[in-house]
Length: 71
Image (cartoon, rainbow, N blue to C red):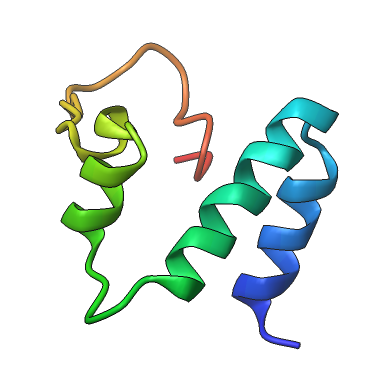
């Protein structure tokens, strides 16, 4: 299995039963949709606008080291 699938399954298993049901509904609808599927169509169709919003990343120095890379 690919690394992406492993990560998806791990994240899916951590969801609540209600969230798992919602993911299953979205996956079913996407797989049964006619025509090409793109990210913007998925976002609009399922009310996932928060996925399409941009995020600001601040690259300014922080006190101590980076929590991600340790530098």
